[in-house]
Amino acid sequence: MTRTSIIGLFLSTAFVMANPRLDFAFGLVEESRGNTVKAAELFEKAQLAEPSALPLVQRVAGAKLANQDRTAAVKLFRDLAAARTGDLNVQLIYADFLIAAITWRFF
Image 1 (cartoon, rainbow, N blue to C red):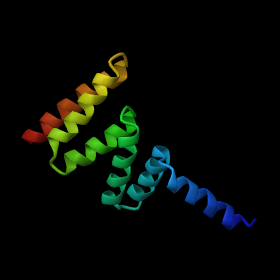
Image 2: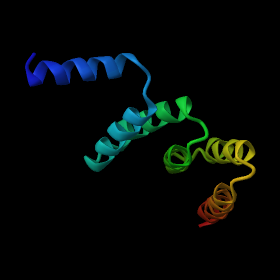
Image 3: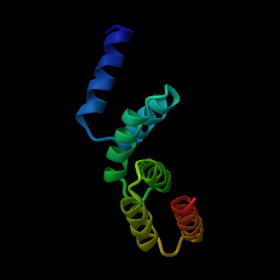
């Protein structure tokens, strides 16, 4: 089996199965290329599969704020904070996010 066919087999298997880590990685690639719309779609797909992953919530909430959808962005963080009540880091990041969302609203 050639290297190309092995890579093709791996990628086709990965695309058949839902893989939030792969979606996140491809989202980072698209973001680095400047394709923010495609990156946001990939981040959201990954976040739906892993709703308690902080980096995914941060990326999706940031995209929602950029699209003026504050309600959805706050809900994402609120749900994450409710799911991970014992994680002080998540609670502090949620508080920082709320401050930034309020500041962004008024300025």
